[in-house]
Image (cartoon, rainbow, N blue to C red; front, side, top):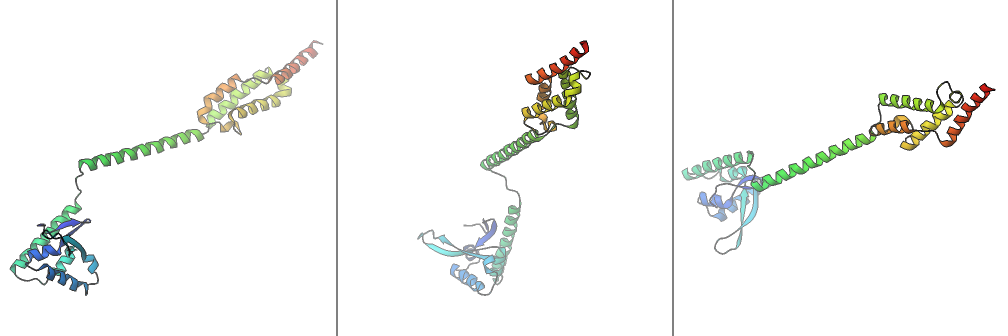
Length: 237
C-alpha cells in the first residue's frame, strides 16, 4: 500500500507499516514504539487500533497498527532529520486532504441513486396512503353542519305536516307530536344515529331523499284518516 493515508470506518488513518516504510524504520521497532506509548497514554485506544495483515511472500498473518492523525503525530514527534521532517509534512498534508474529502458530500453511484429513488418513492407512497386514510377517516366522522341540520329539520316538518293533512287539519291538532316522533324515530333508525344532527356529512343527500320519500306507517295513516274523517262527519251532522 503506497498511500500515505487511507479511510477506515469513516476515519482517516495510516498504518505502522507505512510509517516504517517512509521513515526508514524496521516495522518491529515501530510496533515497539507504539506498544511503549500504550503504557503511558491514557487515550491510547482512541489513537491506535491493532489489526493484522497478510505478508505478500509467505502469506502469513502479522500484526500491525492503524493510527489516526493524533496517533501518528504522537508516534513520529521524536523522529528527527531532514527526511523525517519532509515525510511529517507530507503525511500532515495527506491527512488534511483526505479529512477534507470525507467532509464533502460523496457523489452517489448509479445503484445508490436507484436505492435512494426507491426509498423516496416508498416514503411518498406511505405518506400518500396516510393522507388518504386521514381524509377517509375525516369523511367518516364528520357530521352535518348547522345549516344542513336546519334544512333537514325544516323539510322534516314539511313532510309531517303534509302527512297530517296540513296545519289546519284535526289530525295536526291532535296527533302532531305522535307523528313527528314517528318520523324522527324512523329517520334515526334508518341511519343508525342517536339524533338527526349526528348524520354523517357524506350521507346528507341520502337524508334529504329519505325525508322526501317518507310516509307514515299503515296503522298511523289509518289513525290520521280516522281523526280527519271524524271531524268532517261531526261538521256534517
